Amino acid sequence: MDLRRDVTLGTRLAVVRAGGLAMALAGDPVLRLLYRPWIDDPSGVQRQLREAAQPYASRAGVLVVATHDLCRDLVRDRRFMVRTRSGGSLGGAVEGERDPLLEPVDLSFLGMDPPEHTRLRRLVGSWFTPARVAAYEPLVTGLAEQLVDDAARRERFDLVADVATPLPVAVIAELLGVPDEDAGSFARWGQAVGAGLGGVRSLRALHRLEAAIVELRGLLGDLLEKRRHDPDDDLISHLAAEDADVEETISLSALLLLAGFETTSTLLSNAVAAMTDAGGPWAQLAADPGRGTDAVEESLRFDAPIQFTARTPHETVRIGERDVAPDTVVMAMLGAAGRDPAVHADPDVFDLDRPTRGEHLAFSGGIHYCLGAPLARLEARVALAVLAERMPTLHREAGAVRRRSLLLRSYQRLPVST
Ligand code: HEM
Image (cartoon, rainbow, N blue to C red; front, side):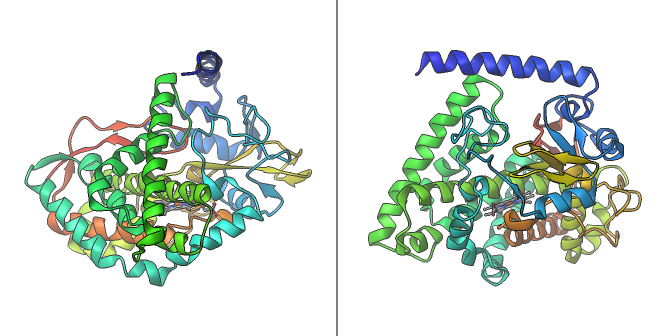
């Protein structure tokens, strides 16, 4: 353990936490999203951000856009990058390096600009085409049925732990080629690393996260070595056959685990929570489980699992009412964009029949558009259909806990009963 590093990071964490609370109490809408009651219902803060002059200058030192049109334009604009001109992470203190608090995990090409981004995304792109993903439907259906049947035996269960989390983990493990005997460790480390995705909140969490990353990288490194000699029909074997760089392959595989599992799990629990609220449309879905796609799209619009992304320009660029100087961080509030009344009538109502339900930015846009969108859509559609078919009277129980995160709008626990 490096004591000097810990003292520096611990002090920064304490300052950031105290500063964040002070700014939230003073009325900064972005930071309010980290605290109750705004964490439970962010719609008021989202409205405030959309109605402010765009971009809004947060006291946290970033600019913020929150309307659908500006968010869409920002993520598509090729003058905006994900690293600063010197190669630093957005908001990071150290040039050319990751900030362990803001960006504790190496996000492979998600955190890269072209040309590296283009090269690495191409390396795995062919594994995520809609046709290839469609072939996973029988596997996803079998897994979802098994999880839902197991949960049904208990009558009352935690949707997050019992269905929403194990499903995407099992799918990614299968896609990468993680052997069954390692699947449990893979899921545990993935969960530990996923919990740190939005930045860590304590030194203990940072240490836990760093230990999990070392173990996860060990497992992926061993698997890559094995598949070089003994290939199978999985993504790691494909990367081994392409003779991809070992470190790059490990980071890439870790990215797929991280990007693909908390997000999909979050989508599932947000969808169930919104639809089983009093007067929610669960009965509508149960009457016609074929409407799983409508439920998925409306949930992505209503409660985007990833609430924001960020970009920075390498030249001065005008957006909305401001000239944005190079290296200024601009947040695009994807969640607030989904509730923009300029696009969606009555945006704070969850409506399966909404004609604009597909017009959301939950998967972002431009060159970083979510690579796993077809897979996430498949998993969520199938799981919701199986749940609605087998549990038509599913309803929420007391004790739901939302996770405290600016990035992920998700549940830590969602007790339900059949
Ligand atoms: C509901 C589930 C999901 C949501 C809401 C989601 C959301 C997102 C968003 C917002 C981005 C772009 C971030 C940005 O523009 O800065 C992204 C990128 C990405 N996602 Fe997803 N994601 C989901 C599921 C998945 C799955 C299942 C996988 C793969 C197994 C995946 C893999 C990726 C990858 C590799 C990227 C990086 C793309 C790039 O940088 O070019 N995602 N995702």
